[in-house]
Image 1 (cartoon, rainbow, N blue to C red):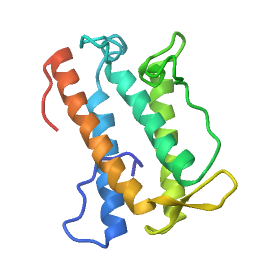
Image 2 (image 1 turned 180 degrees about the vertical axis):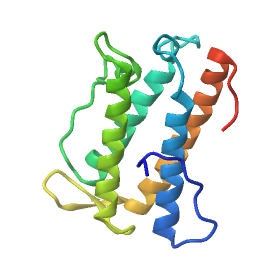
Image 3 (image 1 turned 90 degrees about the vertical axis):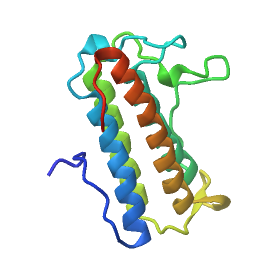
Image 4 (image 1 turned 180 degrees about the horizontal axis):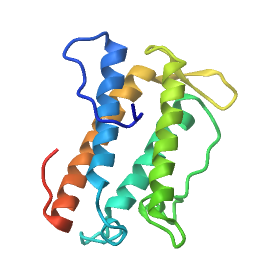
Length: 169
């Protein structure tokens, strides 16, 4: 089985299993939205702000990194955006291939899963020295990531329809 196959979440399951199943469903939905789209169309700016399908995937890779590696695990990780360039994580840079961006997303998701699987829902986020900090629990982060990924899947729906007329889940 592909670790990004889209599987319907169970109708009944323990909370942690349910949260992870819904998040994985939405992660796989994102990849389904970009499947079969030409490289040119994945990079096509179809909104006034210049949003692209591939840029949306790149952004969500950094969102995964931010919540699981940086905020929850306290790892020091790189982000391309700055105060002067706050949208850099949405932009596809020269030399970045579609395959590279999709694999980057998959790698970040795999690392998020690894971190989540090693923790409990009530575990608190940690700072870079490994000390617990009050605030976000793994439960909160999983719930937020379901919302964040699902919201961006709605954007992907619209972008895909604008590109080639494809609609649906």
